[in-house]
Length: 150
Image (tube, rainbow, N blue to C red; front, side, top):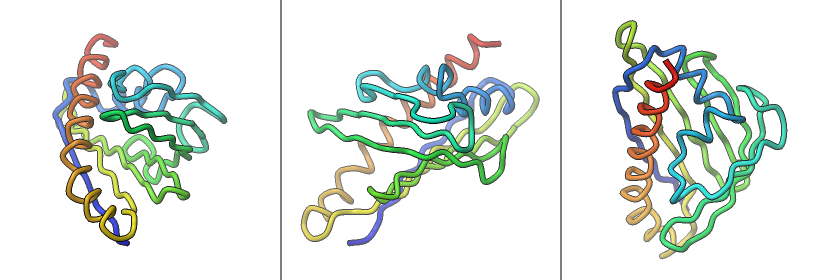
């Protein structure tokens, strides 16, 4: 089996506290940064702001549908937020680092469990570039939404 890791980062033109507030708000903020061509639905099951939030997310990438049941944690509130689906072996970490008063570095990093055998080998080969593209779009959308929110 094994795992694979995907990371994308971008400078976002907004203060870290504003960015973190967007990312951690699963009612309005987080849905606004998800590229709609990949993210088909996000439903809050429990909570909605930060740690303890549970969401169901439906994605479709190149005709392949996926469903995630994610639990949100905040190992370092205001700085690090994580979404985990233990059943699928997926952990995504959002890290917000202030650069100065008006800019922040935002990193999205995911570790995923690969399927066994040849399918896992193909996943490790094909998924990272696709996920990186999705994350770059998500970060660009985050930058746009954060700037409009100021």
